[in-house]
Image 1 (spheres, one colour):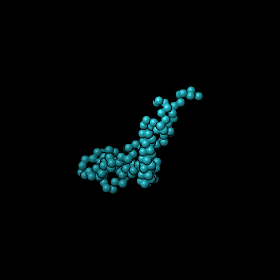
Image 2 (image 1 turned 30 degrees about the horizontal axis):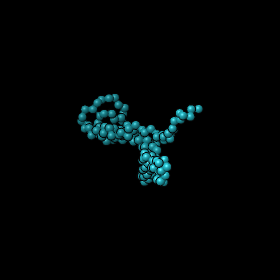
Image 3 (image 1 turned 60 degrees about the vertical axis):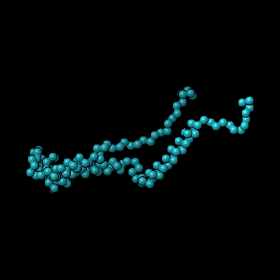
Image 4 (image 1 turned 180 degrees about the vertical axis):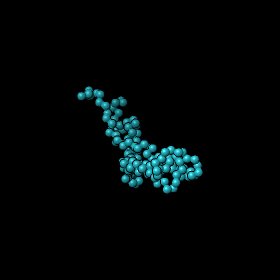
Length: 136
């Protein structure tokens, strides 16, 4: 047991928040831009000549409209993963009204705590009972 004079005040346990997914989970714009750029490339533009399997469009070359669904598969998977990450966050089902109610409760609590701190910072009031026996 520690000595009686060395007792440290314990802080209330802090709620643990789950780790947020990395920002790249929600960053689909570069992939979407790349897909649309490939779609807008003219077929007469020189395309790189990598070895492809039949039915597979080149990764950087022009894209026919029939190949958009296949090329967009990676973006669709990224969107599904982002949706799953959002749904796994805590309190995702809370409404705006619920959140506003909690904010109002916390603001009232803060106001009460500030008032208590201000009272603690004021000097104690003198006794006003007229007892002047100590002063003579």
